[in-house]
Image (cartoon, rainbow, N blue to C red; front, side):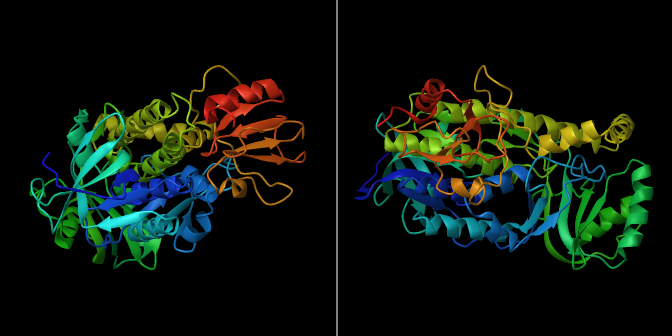
Length: 491
């Protein structure tokens, strides 16, 4: 690269993409004073309005950083039932979380709130600017920038220097392509129209008609969001021009073809067309360049898992990357980002494949769907599927140990506040019921809280900054080994 201008103020981390994943990662890094530059190729924030659902585990993570109340002001709580393949079931009772609901929130709102949070934490955001190229060496990454005012490459091209580069730049990730990481999987086979719009008939009439349609095995969904607005999902078969955005007339045509009525749809808030392409990056890290969110994985929207998977990537990566920048990370800590998150994405891709098959109108798929509908009447089956999709069943492989090791810790009421309120700073935490243990030597990275009344089934737990159980027991020598394993050498 013929790069002429080098920023005099290098960064620790450059993040390509200021969507929810990039903004969340930036905020996590800033908790540890990492110098962050966020690049966003769009000059203005997203304007189209669509509602996304934040799942239980994402809500827990946001609560850990004190962000949940801010989002709750702008969202609408919804029951967890009915999210697996659109099979209508009431949610299981007693889900193991203080946040056992879905939060429907407008996509532009969550983008704005998380970007504001990153900026409040001290991240720098450049809009109208994207990664055009990069070169990495043993010390860092030189990133070439492209914007509307400077040529790409050659005289006048700007470059910045950083310790690491993270691609959070979506399914068509420039960073992934320049990195040469494969993105294997299946191309899209079935296209679907999705949008949010008002309807001209009653909810009772819609429910009755959908019951008749679904009995025939045909696919069409209308789900109310309130104030007369419905999410409308219908096959795109017959709408041949994929290059053009769908129109309201396309929705009316498809609804008529399948349901015999267009339900009087009007006043769309947004409309889109998506396929069922399913792909997973072969690697999440090459040297000092990493991938997160849709840059690392794409899949059909069944179950609404995409945004949640990406946010959870950011929470897993943030503290580990910060530890590497700040010099205390154990040797293999950053490698655990890929070893932990890649299998999670594999599992999500598999369950979305399964859900997509169950939503097919082929006779065999419909027979399996009817069987699943029966099986989900068993609480254990329904609970398993809900916990899988909302990621509260997640257990990272930390090696031999009790079943709780590697699992998330739900929020707890403590003598003073709640457990999650003690994780706002993004540090580790030792919750000690014995009042005998210590984190001396790691107090710059790990907080200590003695509370003999804490509702734990074990004497003490060591939590990582992402709320997963890194150790449990009552032996100081064992605790010290695990502190060193996760949080480096003591000071």
